[in-house]
Image (tube, rainbow, N blue to C red; front, side, top):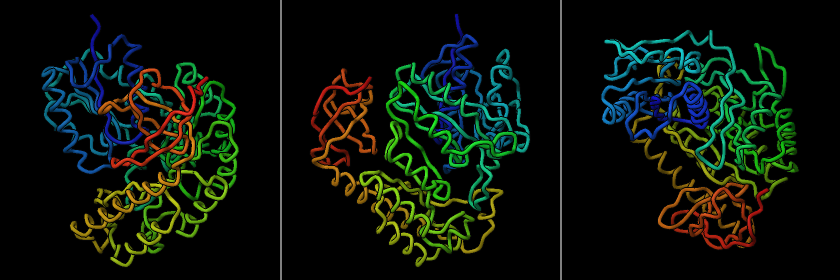
Length: 439
C-alpha cells in the first residue's frame, strides 16, 4: 500500500507553485497525495516569512496535522524554515526542517521516515542557494502559477525575502516555454507568472542573460493557452515597452499588480524603494492610456517606522486620486535582521491599525467604482469550480470577479458575459451572452 502525503501552504503564489512541484516529487516516489485534514504518513508545511505570526501559524498547523495522524512525519519547508530553522525545530511534533536549497531534495532527505528525538535540520547558508529550481501548480484549479524567477537583489529595509530566498535568478526562456506547453496540454486556460521580483527576470549564474520582455514575447506565441497574467511587478521594472506589448498582445491580459508601499517620497526613501511616487503615477497613466479598462492593484504598507500622520495622509490622498482598482494593505511589523527594525519613530499599534482600516475602506470604494465602470459592458470570464450558496465564480481578463448560478458545464470554460450589477458582497452579477469561447 502506498504511503500518503499531505500539504499545507502559507503565503504567496510562489509558495503554492513550489508546493505543487514538491507534490509531484512525492508522486514520482510512489506517494499518494491526500487532503491535509485526513490521515497521512507525511505532512509537508510550506511556510512564509512575510505574513505576521509565522511561528504561531506554523505551530497551529503542526498541531492540526498530528490530530489526524499522531505518529506522522512532519517536515517544514519554505521561507520561515530558512530564516528560523532552530526555532521551528523546537516546535513539538516537527521531525525535519529544510531550507531554501534543500526543499527540492525532500525525497532524499525524508528517507525512511524514522522519527528521532530531535528534529533534523538541513539548512545551508542562503548565499549558497544560487540554483533556479522551476515550479508550477497544476491539477487543483483553472489557473496555474508558473514560477519564472526566484530571489531578490533589492535591499528594501523592511524585507526578509533576500535572506530567505537568496539572490535574483531565473530559468531559461526555452525551459519556461516548455513548461508552459506542458501546462497548456493539461487543459488549464490561464497561467499566472510568479516569482519574487519577476521584472528582474533574466539573471543566470550571476549575470543578466535575458529581459522580462523577451520572456513575455516568447510566451505570447504559446498555443493552447487562452490567458497569461503577470503577477506582482515593481513599478521601476514595468517598462513602457512591456505595457505597450501587453496592450496589443494575444494572450497577456490587462491586469497589473504594482507594489507602491507608500505614497510619501520621504517614506519610500526610508524603505529604500527604487522609485518615487511620480514614476508610479506615470506607470498608472501609461497603462490606462493604452488599456482604459485595465485593472491595477496596489500593495501598500502602513505604520512604517517614521511614518507620521502627514505621511500617511499623503499616501491616502495619492491613492485616492490614482486610477486603480484595489489595494492589498499590509500593516508593518518588525522583522529581525532588517534595517527597519532598528529605526526610530515606531508607530503605535493602534495607529497602525487605524491606518490599515482607512485603506481597507478605500480599497472597497476603489473596487466598487472600478466594477461599476464595467456595468453594461461585455467581458470574457473564466469560471472556476468553487460553489458557494448556489453560485459559481470566475474572473474576467481585467480581473473583475463575477458570480453566476452554478452550472457544471461552465467550470473551466471561458464565457462571454454582460455585467449587470455590483452585489453587496462586492462581486458582479452577469448574464451570459454566448456559449463558451474556449478552444
